[in-house]
Image (tube, rainbow, N blue to C red):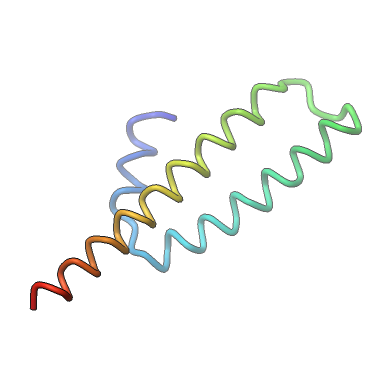
Length: 74
């Protein structure tokens, strides 16, 4: 994942991240189906899609924990 893509993810709000997660999950499912049907030429796309999902899920968790911690400090 490129640095500018990670920065874009860092700047997203929690709701935007959840929408992006849904979109990326659908894209990954489509890639898995296409791989099974031998429609994709670059099988490394699967690994890249999984990494994007992992980064997004991590950011969602970080933001939720930061929000929870901020609320508990108040």
